[in-house]
Image: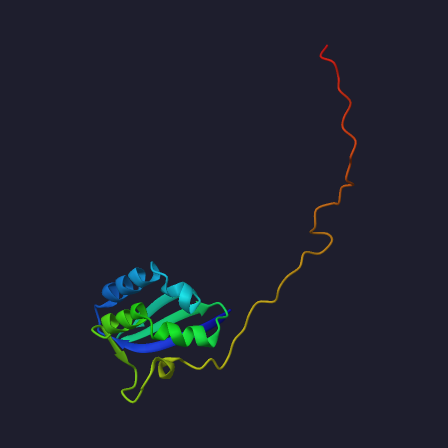
Length: 132
């Protein structure tokens, strides 16, 4: 799994329209083509932060998805409400924030005291008791 954080400008008040564009896009095959498994959108004033979690996808498939009509349609629709954070950016890759620190909680395995007691497997069937 990978996480991408995309930073852009958003027209204040356009959050609902941007969310709707992504909701409609996420209902298509586009997330599967790009490997997107999670998306969250955040804003602070005119700053839009787009968090995506993706499965590992073949880079060639991802490049092909960027040329897909649905991908281009989403970008075109978003352009009415969002713009690059820096006007010098030339591609979506320029909008990806660099991660400079990451922490994940350690995986905790149950100790023997936490694990349920083991029970021996039985193959014997209980004897039938006549109703009495």
